[in-house]
Length: 322
Image (cartoon, rainbow, N blue to C red; front, top):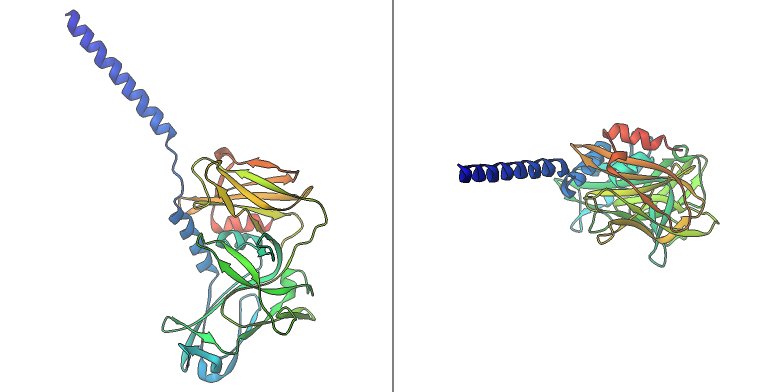
């Protein structure tokens, strides 16, 4: 009997131990977005902004007008496929981005590459994607194309604007490189309330200039909830009072778990909003902090600060920031 009680006690203790471990394991299990989940969410946002046109290359020069009033002037006689002139129906995809909310959901911030390779905030007169295809095959143009862009979409004409090419790195992040312009005009000029842009090739392009602030600059670090990194989340900076630009912390240290603005381009004393964004359940999971930058600041996001929003809700929220 004594032996039976000892066996029973051992079984009971083992059962309690197993139950306790199972409960703790369940409570500690937190589902994080995968890189694929996060990228898919961004791709959906980009698809939602994509406008599709069709025209006949035989018609010569034609003008297409976007939903926001951008005019795309393209000469079908200049289109080629593998060096050969194109005839017949052509498909054109077009994306236009003017607002911070859409910059976040599509991961198209306005980070310009400086001559030394550092990146700094650009203010935009519009970011655009243009691609022409025929039967799914990408075309080229031997005479470029033009766009007329309403400047009232971004606060009026700014004659410091120039053209930039979009470069997407192996991690899927976009940065902007100054477009070469033999005419020396930056490829764009403002007249009345319109930008006139002259583009040499298809792909991503931008009408931008660098943000200027005379204050001393610093770097900052941002900690995000455990389980997130630069493959399944992003951190952005929205400068208060600058509605046409969005900065991104584009480096992540796996050892420290910190996102970094390591270029030292953030003005000390800047009032801004730091935005953490990821995916959860096919929606956006996000958190926003209103901060004033001090030298070598470190900011931390926790799970308890995050909320869930649809694409439309997050876009409206970001666009509504000061």
